[in-house]
Length: 156
Image 1: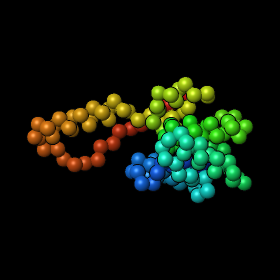
Image 2: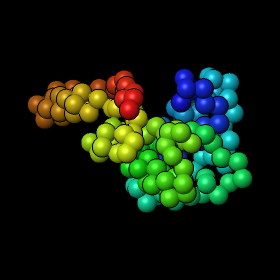
Image 3: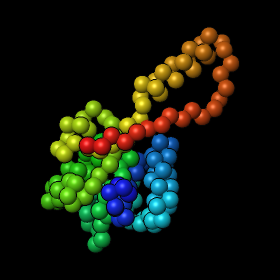
């Protein structure tokens, strides 16, 4: 979104009670800070990782007197709900509003327009989880440490 020249960027977060939602929001805020942009708190709306909450969050954003030109949505299901609400309000994606989701769910490529999204390497995550689980089952010492994998952006 920053690369496209957007400076008025909002975020639809997941529930604050869930670590992935907080991590994704923190990443959004860090990117905005690194770009020298201020996060408008009105443009940060909480969802619940489902389509309905994405729709509701977008409806709240659309009711604001000043709206963002782009949104980072913390999962694809909420992004789908947000796109639905935007279409119902007469907006055209991406002409009137750019949206990026997160998770790269199978349906994302079949949206109209297809959803640009952050892809998590699910196979690598699964492989790492199984490897650690098998090690524990086999009685091997497995150190507790944070494992990170690098996501990539799927531009559609």
